[in-house]
Image (cartoon, rainbow, N blue to C red; front, side, top):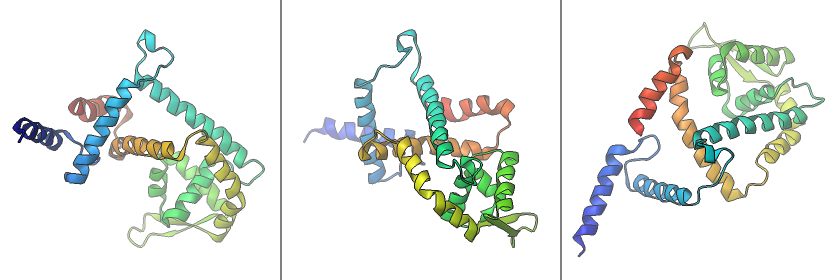
Amino acid sequence: MDYNLIKEVIQLIEKFDTSIDSKLYSKDLAGFRRWIFDGEKMNQNVVDEPGWEGKENGRTPDSVINTLIVQMNRYAKTYSKSAIYNSKFTTQEDFIYLINLKAFGAMTKTDLIKKNIQEKPVGMQIINRLIAQGWIEQKDSLEDRRSKIIMITSMGIEALEQNMIKIKQATEIVTGGLSYAEKIELIKLLKKLEHFHQPIYAENIDPSQLIDVVYNKYLIHNN
């Protein structure tokens, strides 16, 4: 028996146990296998590292990723504008709010705004616009009289259905050029980013302190 191999495996398990993010990997065999698999993929990606504009001048992967995410958001917005052209929808957020209410059911105004990662004043404008259209309705919360529960109406469902073909076409265009396997891999990566950012967003840290707090609390200790 190769005892050196056993020793290496034990050391690997110890590293897994002390360094992983429990939100990403469960502390069992399945989580250990996923951690190994992701590590191997990361090594392969380093070998197959692509080129990018400004790389020779020291431009970092972080800079490229941030730029691409911003650009993809802008591309998506142009397709969304086309999807709601000549409809009663004012912005893409209108139908996104309705889609969330249809998918997840009634919820408080605050919860709906948070689900869409928006500031409260902007979210309230969207909600008031949807109420005025008759697409959502509100009632007092049974748990907290200070809160309002909102839900999609039959008119809201009808408005979605009338525009759903164009909306679905717009979403397909945004991911155009990717194979099914690539889409699934992208979902995994984006969900990993979402798992990182969601708890930070939930802390509602003051903008004046946000960068310093997040960098020291979430990045330095995980590097």
